[in-house]
Length: 111
Length: 110
Image (cartoon, chains in turn purple, orange):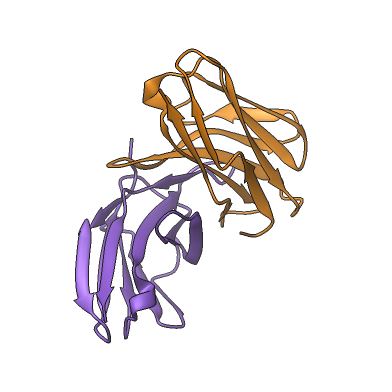
């Protein structure tokens, strides 16, 4: 069963705008990660936030984690057409670093 | 793709035939994973390995087996392919929690 669920399923914005995607999960976690997948390609790791962290930044990415609500958000600032991709959250909740992925948010950034 | 290759990249096979997909890494990472990706389901874990000859089942392991005889190779076998196994298969590796993915294998079972 899916641990993480992203919202919205699809998001279309203009270049320069900010994009926010949300992820909800069900059980306690060790960490939560965000991945990007360009069409027809493998997933690429973007950022990891541990369960004892509340916010993390990496370049134009900002991730927040609220363990009391079991939710996370990914903010991409000043979006570019090259940010067009599917974004997945993944939770590490057990042993052997197994991840459970959500179904993803398809982000389209229009030039 | 972080030193991960998958072969073949595309395959069409008939129902009932065995199929083996190969994942090869040059990173010497301990953990290796096989996922399938289907529309509406995201990525689902099939099997994973936590060392040579050490493997375990994931969420959707029925109809699949794996083997890892050396650190760099992780094989996924569909014992008797069915149309429901038409999918894109991804291999991933990790040393800790962050995973690195291969380019994927598109498998069509007719």
